[in-house]
Length: 246
Ligand code: ADP
Image: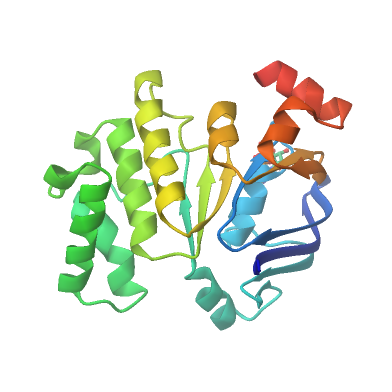
């Protein structure tokens, strides 16, 4: 039996006159890997940012694990938000902290983990992402691909139920993309973490996703398993979009 983990109900989001999400409803079951595709500006990143509580909807409700994220009081929101991790296009590491400290900071401050326990976990994660020898480095001493691996380890250190991935390879040199995508494939295969992924890497989306949501103008215009969406989409708009990116 699948359990619903994320629910957007009739969510509307505007920036000024621009209605970015328009009465949007969708759900994601626990453990699923869902990819959001669609033209630039169709609201995909805004969805991830709302789950991260970096933006708030103007209307509608967002629930995670049966708990309200919006609308909700600040205390409740912070609690729900603890279960959500995000990896950004631009890594967003703390530049003045070592790699290890980047990973241990939130578990210590937000989860109240001891420094020793956080460091032990961080070292295991660094080993998993292939950077065991870089714990004392500063982010600026690492390649983009290595920085993104640290960002992935940092997100996982919080033991999130949900991992949000926002165009995580867009800022990388082409030769570094495959390594990061392989790591994410491994994580998708070896954990039960729920993933929501915005990407233009259609091969990756095809590999990793249980479900693809095609967005246009702030709505999901079609959804389904990747083999359906990528080979026999129902909508002309999806065909056009895939024709332009594949
Ligand atoms: P996508 O991820 O599909 O490319 P986004 O969610 O990033 O789309 O953006 C959707 C729309 O919202 C775009 O028109 C974008 O310019 C606008 N937008 C996003 N964030 C802001 C913001 N903070 N202020 C004003 N407009 C924004």
